[in-house]
Image (cartoon, rainbow, N blue to C red; front, side, top):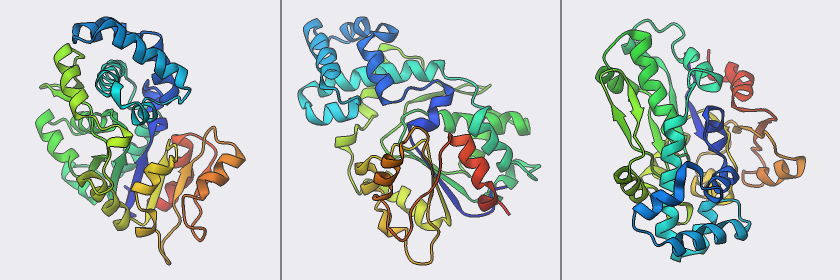
Length: 296
């Protein structure tokens, strides 16, 4: 079990092993009309020239991030968020193999010495995610249901033992008797999802979600950044100085794909007295490296 109070902070890299895109891949999919984006936006009553201008401008901006783009070009906010919702709902529907890689490894730690679902409460784990997808949420419910052979509704209740906060909103899900599943990317679902997602520039520093996220971090001894992009604005909103103080442990973080210079730049986001303990690997490598600190 995870017996040491631990908070995992998830970025896009944490969802990558399960079929979700990184920022530049999401932009490329919009440019390539992935999942018949243009046709669906037309059915949502966007004009063809508006759609094409948005797609062309997004690519030519060179920003590599739809969040960064919409923060600068507000006139494309409505079509941009609809495109974002459309793409993410389709990625969510195709995502798979949640029981593998780091999520599977984490689950096996969670259920170690746990024979009844009631005993999941002995785990001291919380999760903060900057991702829209509900891969972690759905995996936990379905894993609890299958591991303990209980009904889906019961599994949903037990899954609340491991709190998860989505800082910028989340994709909708559908619950059946057998499992919690992604929402079918219908036109109605795209409209609803576009309204519930928060892009970076819309985020409020003291939103309920960010306040809750910071409380998780304050209450934890171990703070682990998995697949995190270390964007300055996100780090600022976490108010690092409120939970990294004298006597606390420095955070841990994966740095897959970052150069030595980029790692040094990332370290400037944290107090000089508590630099991040990095692992130059993926999320699974990070958890396997730090497992001894999370368990007793």
